[in-house]
Length: 248
Length: 198
Image 1 (cartoon, each protein chain N blue to C red):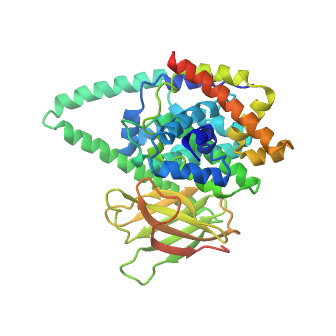
Image 2 (cartoon, rainbow over the protein chains, first blue to last red):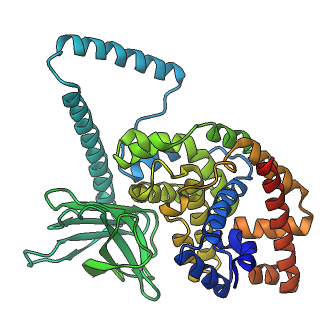
Image 3 (cartoon, rainbow over the protein chains, first blue to last red):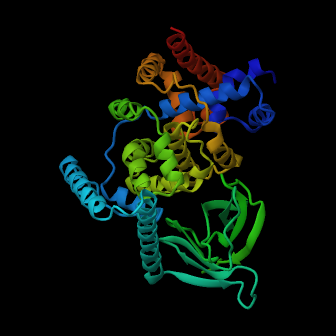
């Protein structure tokens, strides 16, 4: 099909609502970075996002913010009102003035590094708390992998039908620049489903939690691959072979 | 019943850009995720809730959407990337995937949705569209759609149906449905095009 014929399909393509044949036609134009279709598709993506938001306003429950932040392992700080924010800002400013007055030998970079370290520690603590809570739930089942082999990654996969999947691994060196680890949930039939991206620590340890219910009756295994940092739709290079979790 | 979200959308669009937020997300600053949620959480929840119409499922899907953003933000360009459209697209797609799985409609489209939310696609989007005045133009154009045009647009955007699935749902010939879809999209495109070229 010509670009002119495909022009009417950009929005539906961007919505994933085209038939397979039409999708394949546009895929081909996108793959060769077609100077007509790619800008048209980007325009459709922007238009679609705006149209998709033409919906009634609904207030999300306040707990959702905490859940979202816990889901990615970041701090659980409550949202303060403007008064709280101003009070915090003022206190922080005063503390900052005092701090720099007394500790003027410290450089700005040292302070930034300390702040970053505190943030990372808080993040790690939140993750550990989340993992402990997951492990403490009675429905959580465990299966090990890589045992007895010194070199390959080894560890455990924990599955909870109500809470999701947790991977705890060691011997998994940090993915090199431009790469990231991706977890896959492999159904008993069908293609593996992407289950989130993660990075391991310098010491080779990693844990990755995929929150949310999981239907264990149709799930066969969990695996991990190494992918480009944006992630992939299908596994590229498997680093933790499928760990059978079916029937747990 | 629509468009009540416009003030929220307008507030989001008033942010000159999200580049600093994207940079902080890429640096894994914990507060950046809180800021992302404060900026887009309400929009994402409203879009997802409209699609799945189930509060508990909507909460799970918002979580899943933000987790996906967090995990994939490293591939996002803070200078050229449009964060809002990306977040809304990921949220809408997660809800559509959920709806399709409930209805047993999980097909190759699931892979297509993944592919169409790649961070690289959201670079260099036309900034003219992401402007509150243009949003109003689109809203007014949406209101001009006749009932059949509006139905097919809603089926595409909020249920993820293909044109053959719409024809089956509406018990109408495929050709008729295609005409409605194309004419509806033309109305929206034409109005937007005129607004941008002014």
